[in-house]
Every structure is written in C-alpha cells, then in structure tokens.
Amino acid sequence: MILKIKEYLFAHKKAALIVVFGILIVISVGGFAYYNSAQSASQDSDEPEIQTATVRQGDLVVLASGTGTLVTYDDMDLGFGTSGIIEEILVRVGDEVSEGDVLAIQGNREDLESSVASAKLAELNAQEALDEIYENADAVTAQAALDLANAQYELKSSEYTLSVQQEGNRASEAMLDAAKAELTLAEAALRKAKSDYSKTGGSASEDAGKASALKNLANAQLRYDSAVRNWNWYTGSPSEIEQAQLEGDVALTEAWVAEAERAFELVADGPNLKEIEKAELQLANASANLTVAERNLDESVIVAPFDGTILIIKSNVGDKVSIPFITIVNLSQRYLEVFIDETDLDMIDKDYGVEVVFDALPDIVFEGIVVEVDPSLYSAGNVSTVRGLVELFDTDAYDNSNLLIGMNAAVDVIAGKAVDALLVPVEALRELSPDEYAVFVMGSDGELTLRPVEVGLGDISFVEILSGLEPGDVITTGIVETE
Image 1 (cartoon, rainbow, N blue to C red):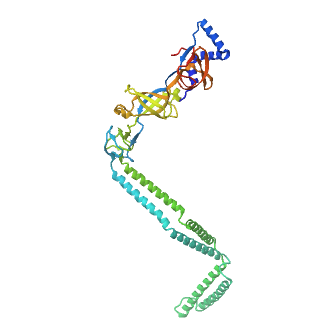
Image 2: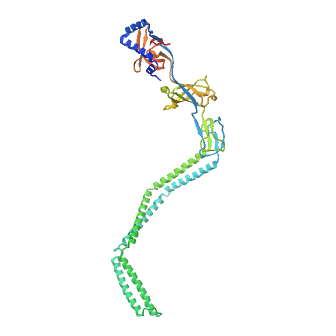
Image 3: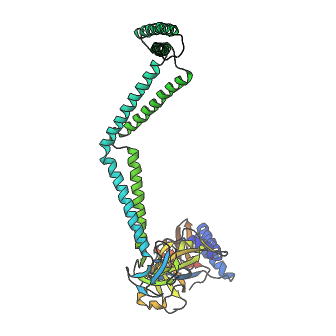
C-alpha cells in the first residue's frame, strides 16, 4: 500500500513543513547564492544550522493497531426437523466428533414414519390422477363431442316447440279444414243425440232404449268437447305463462349448448390444459409434503455435519424441543474478530497480513490474514471502529487448548512492508507538485542539488525511496535534527 506522503507532512510535521517550505521558496527565488548568504546570516544571528541525514537501507512497516477477540466462524446450531421429545443425547460439551457421528435422537419416530407413508400414498394418488388425464384423453374428447351433439339436438327441439306453439303455426290449412269439419260433425251429432234422448222422456229409466240414448248423448258430448279443444288449440296462441316456459326451455338449452361447446374446445386437441395444470399442482404439493415428511424423519436423528467440537448443549433427555439445542464448532481453524480506529480505515483490507498477541499468551506472536472487512462502521457507545475478520495461520503448531473462544488480543494490521529499502526522513521531502517530490542532496563540496525522487511506502517518520538516491547520499532535512 503506497501512502500519501503529503498527508503525513501536513498531519504530523506541520511545524517542520513551514520551515522547509520557506527554505524551498528562498532557494527557488534566489538560487544557491542567496542560500549561502542566508546560511551565513543565519550563523551570524545564532539561528539553527541546516540539518542533514544520510540515506540508509532498512525495513519499513506501515501498520494499524487495534484489538481483537477469538471467535467461532465455522459453527452451526443443530436441532430436530420438527418439535419433539429428546430420546437420547450421545455427546457432551467438549467432545470432538467426526462428520456423520450421531449426536442425538428424537422420540416418537413412528409418527414421523407414518407421516412419510401417508405422504407417499398422496403422491402416488396424485401421480395416478395425472396419468389418467392423459390415458383417458380420447374417451373424454368423444364424450364431450357426444354431450355437444345432445345439447344441440335439444336446442333444435325446444326451438321447434316454441315455433309451432305460436298462433298460426299450430296446424296446416288441411288440418284446420279437418278440425273445422270434425267440429261441425260433432255439433250435428250432439244435437241429434240430445233430440233422441229427449224423446225418451229425458229421465232415468231401466228401459234399454233410454239407456242407449243416454250413452249416445254422452259420447256425442265427448266428441264435441274434443273437437272444440282441437279447434281452439289450432287457432289459438300460448298463454303468458306457457310462452315464458317455452322461451325458458330455449334459453336453458342454449346455455347447455354453450357449456358443451366450451367443454369440447378444451379437449378437442388433447387433454384439458387446466385439468393438467391442476393435477400437476396437486402432484407438486404432494411431492413437497413428502419431502418435508422425509426431511423431518431424517432430522429426527441429529448427525455432525462436519468434524468439530461440541460447544453447547442447551437441553436434556426427556425435554420437548422445537428449536436447535446443540452447537458444533470447527476449531481446526481459528478466527479473530478485530477492531481498528476509523481514522485507520485505509489501513485495513482483505488479504492484508496481521500479527496477533493474545493477552493470555504474551510471548507468542500469531500471524494471519484479513479475510473480511465490514462495509459499514461498527459503533459501540460513542466510538466508531472498522470491524474485520482475521484467519489465523498454523495454530496447530501451538497448544490449541490454550486458545479459548473469547480470548482478547492486541492486533497489528500490516498495511505495507518494505524490506531492505532506501529510507529518508519525511522532513527531507520537498513537494514539487501533487505526488511529485524532490530532496536536496549535499555534495562533497557542500553545495546543494535539488534531485527528483520517486517515493513508495511511508509512515510519519520515514519514506521509502524507489529511485533518485543511493545509499550514503547526504540530504538536507531543513532545520530539524534527525537520527
């Protein structure tokens, strides 16, 4: 990480910068002659002499210090798939287990097995219902066609009945003529029967003649009444109630036809898509219920999902539980939750190296790497910090029993590191323009030369020089004495 030297100059060396910058102005305006004059004047007035430093090689580490706490990272809370009684717990807190080891068993597993069987049956029935839709497609189409034909026949019949019941449509001319003739004949026959009967005295008698005449009169009356009814019907029209009934019959059969047409359209080209969709949804629901039932049965036995250590057991045998009650953690790899001041935000990022010293193990320096940095600040009280997660290296080389969850540590996040680099004091730098710097190099004759340099890593005291200087070069640092 390359730090902005300008920031350090202004943030940490303000007093020195004012003096150095003044010297730079003097030199750039008056040249070296002015500088020598100023130096002489300075000596005459007992002002501090210009200080120098020698370019040297060494290591430079830029870091941000903070605190940390040993935490669990690969941990998991375990419980049964559904609420139930704990029948067995086969581990204790602190036990090391392997992936697949049985940790606890739920009671009343017979009920869970029954649920699985019921769910399988429901899925089977749903599958058969879907299969039947495809298998019976031809028969369903044929039945729909037959239903449509019957509905259409009934519609024609009701429409015909409505039509022939209307006035003027009940009989042809020939039928009217026949009905008229029948009515005339029936009238004549009735008059004759009445005359014949009146000749017998018109009263009941055991006389055979009177009985015959009465019978003839009755038959004649019946014939006449029938002829009148036929004539009236042929020449009449429906009553309001009859008309409403006839029209209602037509409307009902029209609705029947429309329904039959829709039903036929749904299956004319194959199985009814809506029926298929419904059957598929029912099958999907049954399959989902089976999956849940099988998972609940599987999870009635808790097994270790990975190699680890039992950290917490919250319940006992015989307790009814509905939430996780066993916590397993992977302690083979240790992680540290670290916090640094928000002013060092640019000093921490993923893959940055870290050195850790636990309060309880002050003689051991652990190394690690930043694997996670929160995108927002972490606030505790009135203090805002940057939170990160550090993965520690090679903890197996130490006694892991001494690394307990919750242990506190001092943390140094290494933002940058230069090994065997050329180093100069920060005070020696002169900023020519943003991100461009130079230093005054003193020759063997005491003359100063302004030489551009390329800077690299830096802290508040020293800066790495990437090019422009050689080891042993003597440079000025202004009036600030440096070691």
